[in-house]
Image (cartoon, rainbow, N blue to C red; front, side, top):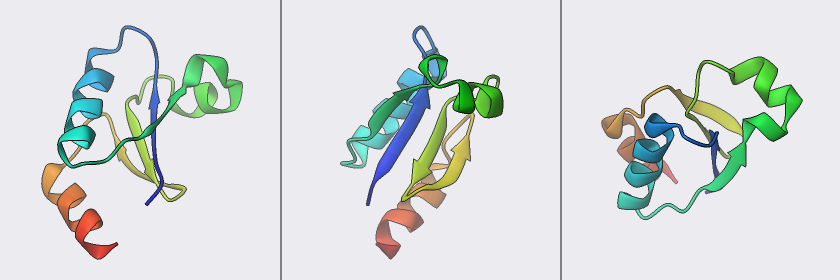
Length: 74
């Protein structure tokens, strides 16, 4: 399972998302959207964004129950 967390410096929701992912034994690749104009255009006000295996699964906040189901299905 490849997990990416779209984030930016100083984002407290992004820090919470990272903590949640790590508590589920996931170590996401951190992607700073401010360094990626394509992602910035799509997700500027929606971060954090979690993409799992290339598909965006969460925007803003992580639904822990849905995350658990996604992990179980892998």
